[in-house]
Image 1 (cartoon, rainbow, N blue to C red):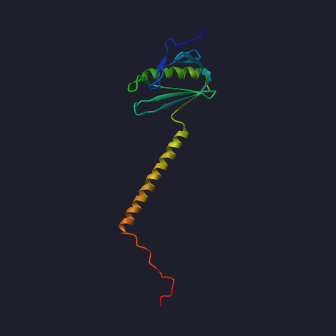
Image 2 (image 1 turned 90 degrees about the horizontal axis):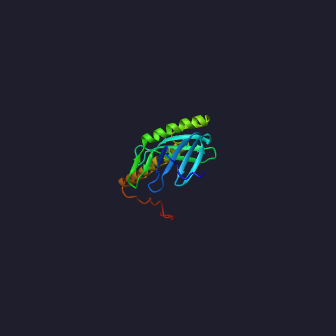
Length: 171
């Protein structure tokens, strides 16, 4: 039997302003992910990590994301923001929370070894810190150059060095 759409999805969203709706449904030990007419079946036991992040953006102050990492290296990411058009979004905090709560319980039951983590990975935080330090040093370096140029102007025009002699005996 070929499945072409998910009947009564547990959660659905349009992750981009232009694109198709993605549907999610938990059935026993499987997560069904439906995009247009393609349904992917993901065994919950194959999910090795679930990462929860809070990602506020320019459009949404409450952007939550869940990333499911599979044992084959692939990942599935979804959030609470669904786009209706280029300018209109649908914040689905309650539906998202309800779905994620049920999904986490089902994953924990299917794979007790699954890791549940929150926040961005340490590598991302280190990259942000390095960028912040570099930007700060750049600002201080530019300020130092500017202040030195002001100090040089305050001393007056630069004088040519004094001549020590012409090289001939001047006596």
